[in-house]
Image 1 (spheres, rainbow, N blue to C red):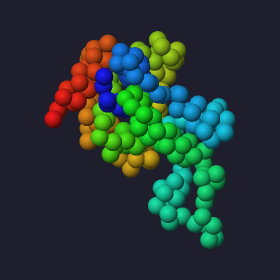
Image 2: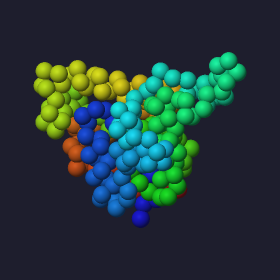
Image 3: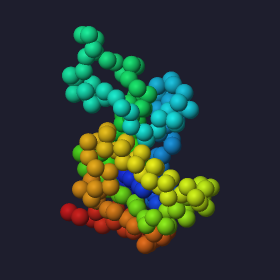
Image 4: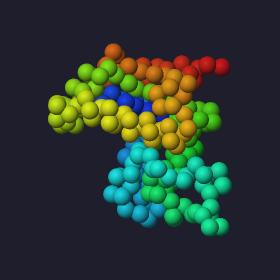
Length: 208
């Protein structure tokens, strides 16, 4: 039985979510993606729809200052309830990600999970990417994106994910320094990428 928590960051259209879901299924461990939004909504008592609109989007906010303890306005210290919804969701999801990681092995997609769990020993951090044309084909066929808008959609979505990650982690999204394994799903295919990640987890667990 694996004891590894697998985090998967991914380029838009690379199949990272599908790969993560298949890895979890084959390993018999929990899979977390959109579930985290529902869990955050339940924990906070706020609307799931509101959180969905804010999911993996960075706010132009004061979270960093608040976390550093040096933000005040007229002597008033901002509270979590007064934070932008994006920041509130990030903080709640951060706690949830730490909680599910403590429960045991699982697969977590996106949401800065690799950064949040950077000090967790039993982790395998993965970045899934693919070439532009493979990603365009995937979003056209699977997400019904207009072919004329596919290239721009890739740029927009990747920029959104990069901004979110870079903002909340103060690190660079997609940098090799943040991951144990980087997988080109267009070179290996979905199923082989799944097997590659599983093999990498096994090898990592066998390192003494």
